[in-house]
Length: 222
Image 1 (tube, one colour):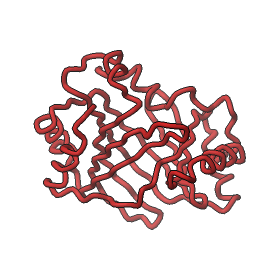
Image 2: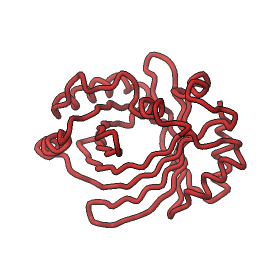
Image 3: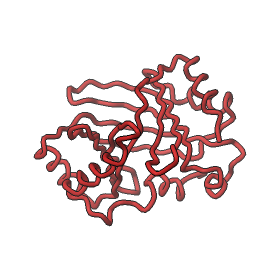
């Protein structure tokens, strides 16, 4: 769909640092929460030995080929198979230290029984959102199709990262995520389902499709 290798090389050339990691895959569970439910869940995280790790203000821009003009066209090009995103994050950790980072993320869905996202991340300290967007539009021939700003509260429970994202005119959604090798994906999926249940998340709160996809369907190409 995109020339991802070319995009990634362009960002490395612009002094973005690759966040190298072993071949790990992102396994996640999501939920749309009731009003104030996140406060009850956060209390339960603490009771289970977890802790609050950071707060973030996030601005995201998602990119697609410049000739696409509608969500239906985007779907035909397999939105759920590949993602190119620029993120500006202002992050304050539990010590009170604040850092601003601009990040390119490319994701490709690995198909098969244990489908999961293969994610590549390239980052640069500071606010470079405008120049990063320019790099994708001029060098890669892409355009932004969806932009969103949100506030995030991040928590850690064992090897599970749990985030609560507050989105204007939508509410709060929760995501529990683990980074695992491919062979460990089935076990991670089962573990995340148990964690969500133990934290008080109901089965009916899990979206039928990803929350990002739900938002993009109604808010893209505005």
